[in-house]
Length: 348
Image (cartoon, rainbow, N blue to C red; front, side):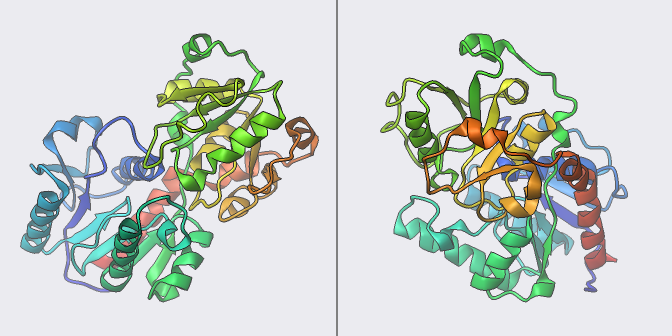
């Protein structure tokens, strides 16, 4: 693991707005915790000027990069890496720009047909992660399930890939904003809640089918449209409320007041929302597939994501374990320490 590299350069291209997905959440929270551990002068974050104030750092130096598109960004970052002979770190499915790289792959859904994209997009996605596996010095992923899928599909040896989990502590200091309940005409314990990007692997059709079978229950769907359009379903069910994108305060309020949180995903690399729900006291009804049983163990009510004939009240009557074991197992602090040890192993 020895290399002459002394400087660590982190790609901050994922820091670009307050609206972000799970991979971007991972990057932001790992950066915040990593900043508490690293020595000054060794770690740098490359970031666009217009977004540099979105993240407050003390020990990681921010370096501004001007780039109009991804191609220009990649070229400028590569030149910077070569000039400084730096170790390159990317937390959000980034492209391996050169050999001295540690790249995070949250998932390889393209190999499993989980996104409803064009054949060209899927080929590009597959080629990208194959290149990552061959070129990068090390790969990080977020669950043992994801690690195994990568060992199955990519030219990777087990010692070249590490599992560093997500956390949930980003919600601890967020104030609940219950105005969203009034705005959407919702009452406490009267609705089921789903949060996530509206993409194929999230299996949003499960909620529409279950809503048809449970007409006396309300279902709240929150999340931004991404890649797929769900206009076909919109308005089909009178007991579904679609909020669109919500901020952390609104999200926290919906978690705290829901009857249960629903997460019927077909495939997840980790799945942060159910953990956020557990922290906020909501029961979780989740799929029995991919990484979810690994992460949530016996703290969840499990469903087959391909079956719709469920009575949700009956599911919630089934006993589950306290979430304390799960919540104590995962934290951004623990994950940042693992990242720090991994990076230092390649730079000392």
